[in-house]
Image (cartoon, rainbow, N blue to C red):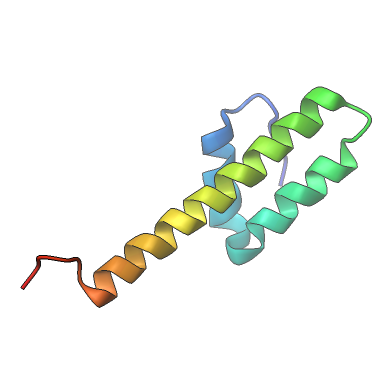
Length: 74
């Protein structure tokens, strides 16, 4: 898989989640460490890792609300 550093952070995060699933956050952090000599790329991959983490948290929060039921839904 070829990584495009010019694509938007959210798009890259979605692509990593599709390809790597639960390992997407670790892959993004590994890319951040690999690019430590190129600060702009390291910052890009740090932002991708944050976006992956937030997307997975939102997904789990939505799944939790769907299984437990939201307040007021009777």
